[in-house]
Every structure is written in structure tokens, then in C-alpha cells.
Image (tube, rainbow, N blue to C red; front, side, top):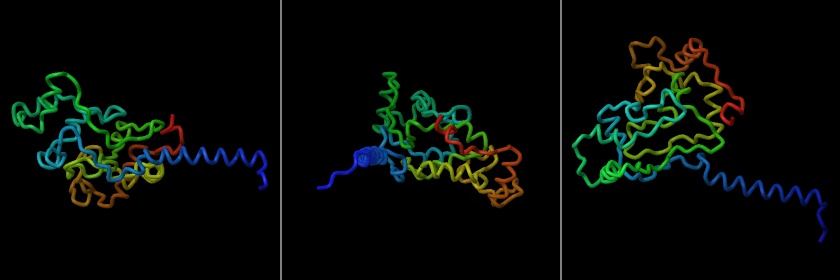
Length: 214
């Protein structure tokens, strides 16, 4: 059997290692998680709380406008909101236990980016990117599910052409908002509205690698 040149053998070995690393990364990459909707310690229904009762996203995700992370509410927020209402239900046992022990509820993360990716919620919200653009209609979800790939290509599509995804800041957390049905908005076309917002806010998203991979 003819032996490969030394440099060819080394190249094949490197290629094999890269293939293994890529396959491992692919198995845990967000691109594979569309539809991922894990059971949570508490069956919290966004459809009931947001869609039914009209709760604003910021009531629980309090830092979404000011910080990189949206924030997960501490147990005290749940208890303060519920008061005594329904707190004796078996489904809320983890909430009661957390309140009694001071140990946080261990929610299962759904939207999980790779460790080398930096995403700033506050920066996006400040420019008029709605929660729905990345998380979908959570106000209609009994159980939170990932609806977008969150892949690099998906992010770059938005950075290269943000206009159709932008809205006035006051509507960022109104997930069902539609400019075509809003009498306060002159432009009924999403692109025309977005292009105006880009001019007014000097919105020019970077596509440089260091923006998300510092």
C-alpha cells in the first residue's frame, strides 16, 4: 500500500480533528434547537400571564432595557405578585420551597448561545428590536420554545438589513403590535417605518466579528 506524504497525513489528521470538533459543537449549537421546549420546574404559562393577563415582559425580565441579560425574576417577584392566591397549589410547590429556603428555582435555559458569543439585550431593545424578533410570540406559548435558529447567519441577516425588524421603542414589548393597524404610525409598511427609524436613530449595525465575539 502506497504511503501518503508526511504533510498529507498531517493534513488528514487535522481535518479529522476539525470534523470531530464541529460535530460536537453542532450537537450543542443553538442551530439544532428550533422547537426545543423543555419542561420547567414550574409550569409557568406565558400565554396566561402575558397573553391572558396582559403582563409586560419587563415585569419579570426587569433588566432587559438596561443590561446585556434580560434577567430572570427572583422567587420574591412571584410571591409578591401572587400573594396568597394559588400559592397552595401542588404545581407551585417549587416556588414555596424556594421562598422558604432562599434557594433559587433552577429554570432550564431555552435560548442558549455559545460561550464565545456576546449578545446585549439592552442595546437591541434601545434600537427598537422587539422581543418577538428573537423569541417569537411568547404571549401565545404555554411552554417557552425556541423558534429561531439564533445562528450567526441569522444574526447577520438582521444586522445587514435591520429595517423590517425595527419598531418604535414604545412598542418593543407589545408582541402582537402591527403598524398597519396602528393609527399613530404614518408608515404602514414595515420597511418604510424601519428605514425612518434607522435614519432618526443613526442605526448602523456592525457586521465585524469582534462585535459579537469580543
